[in-house]
Image 1 (tube, one colour):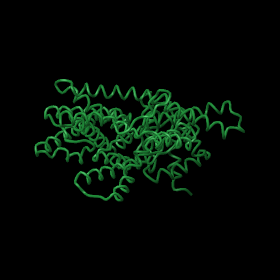
Image 2 (cartoon, one colour):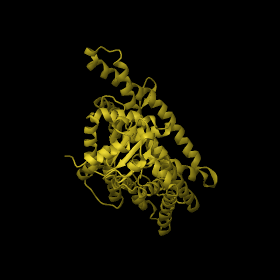
Image 3 (cartoon, rainbow, N blue to C red):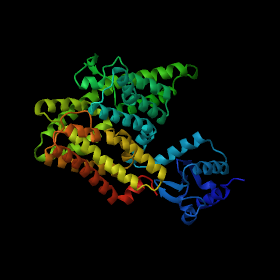
Length: 461
C-alpha cells in the first residue's frame, strides 16, 4: 500500500475528483494542476491535504507544495490514480494549457525561462571561474602559457559557445530537432567567421557576403533563440509536404540551410544596424548634461546584456580611456549590475521554498564577479517587477556616479574585481563601494515594497 494513498485521495477530493483534472505536472517542489472547472475546487480541503506544506492558485494553476523528493512520489501515485498518462505526453499537455492562462508579457518571460533556466548551472560555474581568473590576473598573479590556456578553457568555453547551448535549448523548447540546433549554434560561432569580440575591438574585419558584413555570434542570446525557433517552425512546415521516406534527408537539410542563411544574411545586418544605433545612443547619453545620461544608462545597461550587444561597448570604452583617461561606462555598468543584484537577493528573501531560494542565490553569486546572465535569466526576468526594480536601483547608482564624477582606469572587470580599477586613491575605492551599495539597497527596498505582487509573479507561497 502506498504511503501517499490518503494524500492522493484527499487531493482528488479537494480538486473536484479526477474527472475535473484537465492536466497536471510537478516541478522540483510543487504539484501543479489545471482543472476543467475551477469552481469545483474546495479551498479548505486543498489547504488540508496531508503532507502538503501549502496550497495556492496562480495563472490558472492549482499548486500544492510537497517539497523536494516527496513531490515525485506523490506525482507517481497521482498518475496511477489518473490512469497512468505518460510523463512526456502529460508535460506537453500541461505546457499548452498553462500558456493559455498567461498574458503576452508573461508568455515571453515564461518562454525565456524555459529556454535559459536549464543552462544556469553551467553559466554560474564558468562565470565564477571567469571572475576568479580576472581577479588573479589583476592582482598580478603570474601564470605560464600552459596554465593560462587551461584556465581560459575552463572560463571561456561556455560563454564563447553560448549560442550553441541556447540554440539547443530553444530548439528543444519549440519542438525541433535538438541536434540540428547544436549544429546551427556551432556554425554561428565557427572559427571561419571573424570573432564578434575581436571585430568589436578592431582586431579583426568582418567577412563580406553579397555585400553584407558577416561576423560570429559569440555571446549572443536573442539570435540563438531565433535560430531555435526557425529550426522548429521550418521542420514542422517541411513535414506537411515532404514524403515520409525523404524526411530524414530533406527536412534537416532545409531547416539547417534556411536557418543559418537567415541568421547570417538577414538577422545579421539587422543586428548590426541595431548595434550601431545602440552605440551612437550610448555616446549621446554619456555626453548628456546634468547626469541624466548616467542615470538612464545605468538603468538600461543590463537590457543591452540581454540582447548580447554589450560586447561592442569595448569600442566606446577604449575611446573614453584614450580621450579622457577614464572609463565611466565601467562604473555605470557596475551600478546597473548592483541594482539587478539587489533586486534578485531581495526576491530570494521572499521565497519560502528553500530549493527555489537556494537556486536564486546560486544564480546571483556570479554577479559578484561581473557575470549577470545567470541572475537575469534565472531570477529577475521571471518577474518584471523584480527586473524593473533592479533598473531603478541601477539608476540610483548612476546618479551617485554623476555626483562623484567617478571613472574607472581601465575596462574588462567589474564589481569585486573592478575595485582594482579605482585604486588611484582611497576616496575612489570608497566612492565605488558607495555606488554599489546605493544601487543594491534601493532595488532591494523597492522589491520588498512590492512583496505581495512579487510573490504572486514568482509563484511563491
